[in-house]
Image (cartoon, rainbow, N blue to C red; front, side, top):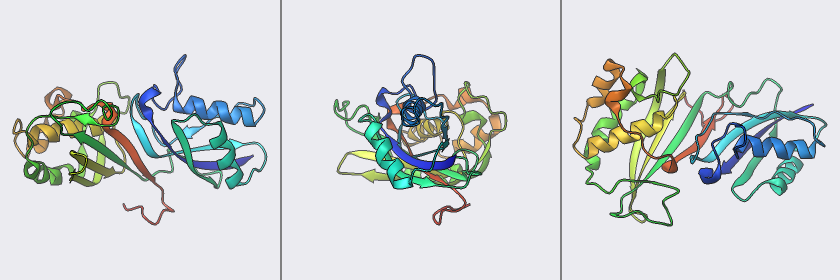
Length: 255
């Protein structure tokens, strides 16, 4: 058996998320079917770095798996791409030590969220952005972002469907920038881990701060109350992208 690591990008619009689900089209399901075909119907299990939800996109999802035989990494890349639908591309294939696990070996992840600012929803962009047509003061958002950085209990920012008990996470970076050409604002969050819907709830809270509906430092109160209902909103899945996953051997990984 040879152990592989793949980095891939996908348009999440027509997927019911990453994880295999009965009678649903999923990223994991498509990958496993392709590998099974290559292995002549042997069952190949693929581990992902995380479970993106329905409609969420990826620019740098990472998966790992064992495959019978010893196909060179370049050949694995070409073979897998030849079997992929148009909404998945394998960006990189590597042969890695058997101890590597796409999820458990990861030390950090970076997510990007795009917010369209137009008055009306752009029909050609609606599947790739969230939409917020209301007034925003980016200076208020920038003033709130330092409160996101650091180690906090993110209970107020975790959807009720999550199963993880420990909701303490560390955020290393939280930024916002304006993309004038696209009339968007773009958030990025880099941390050691994220809870179910956490990034989408963070974005919704920051947009309310930018709109003046919340105090600038309301994050500090929300950390204390540990109440999901007080954070309220969740930004749409369509604007969220898993941008990058970090591992100890990566030069760009920072802890």
